Length: 254
Length: 323
Image 1 (cartoon, rainbow over the protein chains, first blue to last red):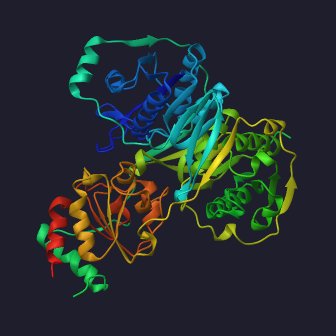
Image 2: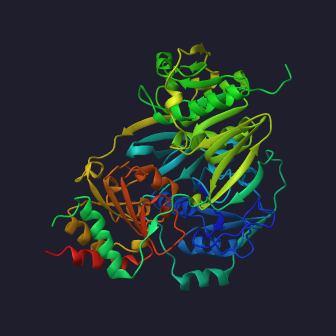
Image 3: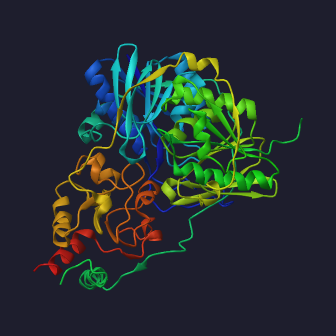
């Protein structure tokens, strides 16, 4: 079983966001990038599938994603069997799915497991787009994946804690919401070792046509119309004010 | 006919025989837009056609029924929806950003060749053009985008629109479309359904909730907040990262994929306020948020906030409650 896990570098959400001079995009130049957290969950789930059912896990990134080498090496250090860097970059998820689909047409996978969404694109839901391009079935918001012969058993979560287990014919694409266990860590020493060994395979794929993009009029930070009244004065006085608020509503006895 | 389509199609979300509330929100918005364009608000309903009676506000309910559409099968829904889109050629397809919407929106964007605007919280017809407001980066940024082409798809954050106009009126015209042949050979099947597990504590019935998020850092640190919760006689609840890490059971999770709560007061420690979390708790009477990041989105909907470090504030609160 060949499991491919597409990974994406996304802006670190703790960073201050700046916009491009024309106000229609996020200025990425000074942003720090991290692995999309849903992709981290997807990688964990893929490694769990491999541990139970065998096979190999190949992580795949786009060459133009900032810091992608580091993300791929970290995935190798966690237990991925191979890493692929696909030439080019993608301005949106449609373009990303086209590049990945071109790679997967050349190097087919039985299971493609990736994060259910990425937070930085307006159309950031890769798994169904990829599946539609490849003609595969897909399941999103997955919380557990098991391989079972020529099919996979995928637990799909709905709102309010309901879920269902689907039996899906392979090949298939899975959009992971959360892995069965928290993503594992790779020790820095191991990442360094893997990085020194190299081993990222670089592949070139033909450019593909994609859907017309949306026209962005402007991007902005939401106005904080209903902003909280901020308590100040240090820990003690803030604690006093909170207790008083709760007491005035009869939520604290005494 | 060469003029631009003016109908707006909503895909109904149902759980069993119950049309879900989010469908009414989308239908209200679909009516507003379609009527501004001189078109119709249509609902695609997969399953028993008699459920169309729950959709009186639609101009038309387009029904497709087939054994593969008895429950929610992503593959069957995709085939049926593509079929309806080709039959009805709407200008705009509205989906909720639920599991169903996440499955269908992006796939149909490729298969029906239409741009996708995800995480939409606002939608207006500015003259002939639809303009959507989308959340980006977990709601830290909003983008205003034009859906100027012949067709487009939006996945809408639930709670964005007033559902009342989507519930009244009617009755709707019911149009039954024969199912596409692909439904006879589905590539997936349901093995098992799981209902929510019953928890030791029902966080939806508590007057006061003490809630923790990613900012707690580790399971060991939970003890600190648990002491405060004990002192207040309130259950401990959490945002998704905490339950995903296994630090608290799933039955304590507040948010889109967890439980919706409306306590009289909600104390949030180390929760930044991702849109998925806000969906579950914005109805609380009093929201008190503690987060060291002054730009945390939770402060936008909280009534009272503080940037004090939770590791200082929580023990200070507990101390003040000591008998």
